[in-house]
Image: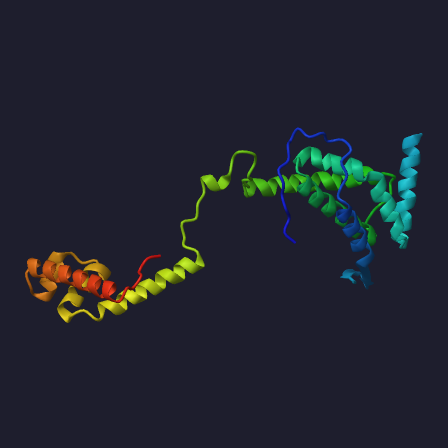
Length: 49
Length: 196
């Protein structure tokens, strides 16, 4: 999805900033979908939907 | 004392997460999102980029934890901060290689940068017009057609044309003049529109 890059003033206060809910939700879903499969001495990653 | 408690809580969440408790990750993110995100934002000053780097940071965290490559030494937050720091450095390295101009305030990059190429529709119209003109030229008498083709399409001088065709320069000039007059006549007679 295309990102909309908006103007941002560098002087904006840095405190109390949090990532977007969508970002957190993506990370939690990514974590749930990611499986690491061990095969002998190798590790494979699989993303399950 | 508070720090030790925080470290222990992190260690427990990390252990639980590695064991398969997905909610532990949510707790870990909740506990540290503000510090990590603020750190990234303080370097890049762009919320979208900060979000991207925050996301990449935790993707690395998730992969490392799931692969069992994380050594718990009670230093979860410093470890995540180090990953974020490295990704911020990567971001600046990349942006140095690819300078990016953004439209900020009163400055618009497109005021100094233009693309003079025709768009697809205008290019099609131009091709059609050129094709029409070529068809019209074939209607001219052979001698006029020959001079016009040499002058316009082969970009020859009238001296070269006169040498090639074996006529005087004045005759070549005259043929060119009649060729243009005749073309105009045909265009006007049939009301052909040849503008883009």
